[in-house]
Image (cartoon, rainbow, N blue to C red):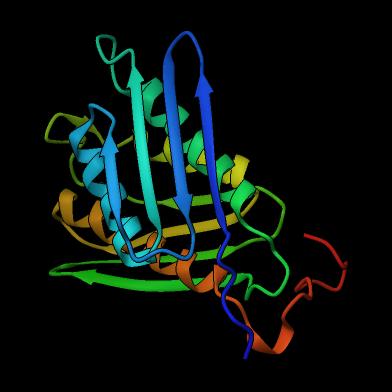
Length: 200
């Protein structure tokens, strides 16, 4: 067996005229989570990723929330994606991850490929437009930013559900679970890039 790497950690700061964001991640953590974005429902969803992915995350964001949450949510996806890409050595990882997660009546499926090629398929028919004042359409912007900068292929499908909170929560829990699987070290292929191309 190959020991899990101990240094899959990164900190990224991203500052624009619209947002100032700092993200630190430990991909081999225990799910410790600290988050201050000014967007409570987003914080709640990111907590699911940390806990179910066993990823330590420390997130601080200040954005132009007096306009709306769009820039903060999108830029946080970008910055978190950059942190994952910086922290992850793709040698020896399983590369693919998938998860089905239910919550009461809701069920979502997330499939990930750490392919080195950004691609997003996002199919979540929310039954309401907002939860707790948060525009759930912004989750697409978050995932698009993450995908583009983590360099992954990501498929997200909400298969059923009528409670919008449950729909979103199953998506983020499944996202955390799929990340955890895809980033896991395969002891049979340590230090080997899992691709016939020899690179990801």
